[in-house]
Image 1: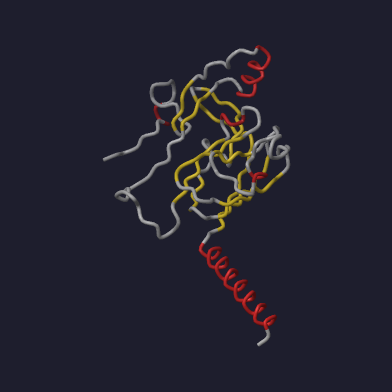
Image 2 (image 1 turned 45 degrees about the vertical axis):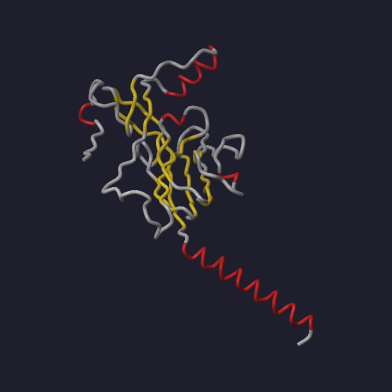
Length: 220
């Protein structure tokens, strides 16, 4: 065997091994597909019904459940009258900065009537993060949780929980949040104080007309 042919044989083996390693890693990873539809929907809180921009008719929006190493694809359809983006708060956008969702910084906003698909991968992360709109104050009602589990087959570093329940904290304004933002920009003062604090989108039984929607969790 000549030196040249031996060299290329060795290079081919290295390339093959690298390809097999990458194929094995990609085979274990999961591609998580979701669809977010952003649109105005009637919501009743504090005895009043208002039209608010939310995702998939849910408030808070849907919780994403993924594993460390998964790829995420979120098709986002903007049916609202506002420009919008979705920011994946706390997700490390390694070599996918354009998917970070910071309006006018990493991407142009998704215009009304337009759709856009976010594509990124969860790399070396575990825990509970959140996603939210990143244009004006749409985040007041356009938000939700991201639960990142360890890679499949990983063991718990503590006793395995018997159950889990994401908790999303927020605020509620009877006035349109966009109007609240416009007022603070015009006056330069702090925004109006919210009318209620929320747990998973509900004010709780200490507020008017809210007892039936109180978030209750059984614990041991």
